[in-house]
Image (cartoon, rainbow, N blue to C red; front, side):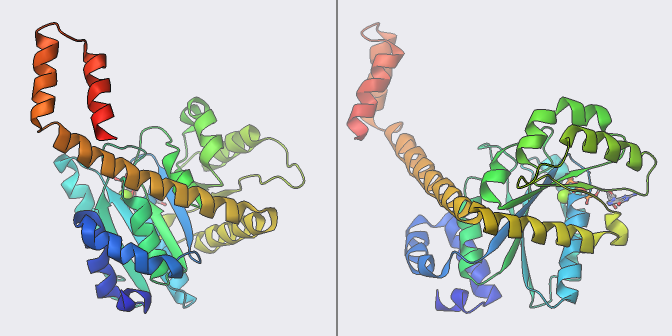
Length: 306
Ligand SMILES: Nc1nc2c(ncn2[C@@H]2O[C@H](COP(=O)(O)OP(=O)(O)OP(=O)(O)O)[C@@H](O)[C@H]2O)c(=O)[nH]1
Ligand SMILES: [Mg+2]
């Protein structure tokens, strides 16, 4: 624990494994880490599969390290074994920088709880925060539609789009506008970047004083073009949050998400053990014999949980 707080990367990696696999140790760890958390800043990176999220994260990482900043990356992997090749590709793109002590890179598997994240993502972010990582980049699994979970976990949410996505932008408008604090229009080396930028700007509407209007930043991530502009937009959004109380609101929202995740996990474990109990088998038999309906059986079992 002390070593995690002191910024030891190997200790942090072990701590995260505990969080994922060993609830008892995780509880001890969390109790000790709590007082050290609350200073880090999380930037979520989301967007459709193949939009260039990992390339962007790698390039943002390098740009930050050049300024001698410390950055942790948490990348969510898809569950499907069919995507193994892509995962390996992601790793290779970041491999040469992960040896740098100013960088911490970790991946975890996205789960059925949705949003391109894992249920335990908030707990891992909290461990990174307590470990003294001032910046945390959270790359979601490439989700077909925009999910809201990442915006709950992150203070600043970056939505990565590509040129020629005018129609998709229209279709996804509501969700996009809700989650995006910054639009990164990546692959700007391809035709149509200006058109897509114009479509987005139109959707965003006019600038209203005092309200945050997501900037649209053009990048060519695999050539590291536009990285200072993206960091600049992140800093500007952070300053806006700090000035409007948004930073405190985010920390509150994030803690609520982490607590909800722990509750869900505890309840899932209790449901799983209940489902192995004789009372559960008896309830199933009762439904089969027509003595009670499924809902009544559920209510009786729920009452026994309390
Ligand atoms: N032309 C061009 N290609 C790019 C650019 N950025 C990334 N790519 C390429 O786009 C492909 C997908 O990039 P990734 O970074 O893996 O995309 P991703 O969004 O992380 O993909 P998933 O994690 O699988 O959803 C790779 O072949 C990259 O080399 C860019 O700015 N221009
Ligand atoms: Mg990726």
